[in-house]
Image (tube, rainbow, N blue to C red):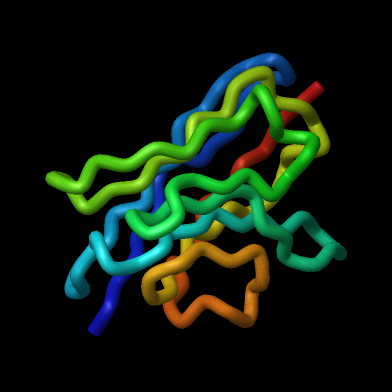
Length: 123
């Protein structure tokens, strides 16, 4: 069974940084797009960023441009989301998800999800 496990969330002050990790197991890592999503209380889940060997990396969140960077380490089957200059509005549960071949900004396009990691940004 495919597994995705996120880590790296926590409480940080505005302006601070966090690096989230998503470890993927039990599937051919290089054949999947791995996306980061987030969901704030009372809001819909939204796409943040995604990377795949087929179409590179994609940023879906305008507010994260210049602050969030997605990267991967195929040797570790891990995708990272480096988040800098965090803002209170970045507070959410962050999820990683996987789908075959290509990235997508649509939640419904992904087949596998991690359990999520909480990011809380205080003012």
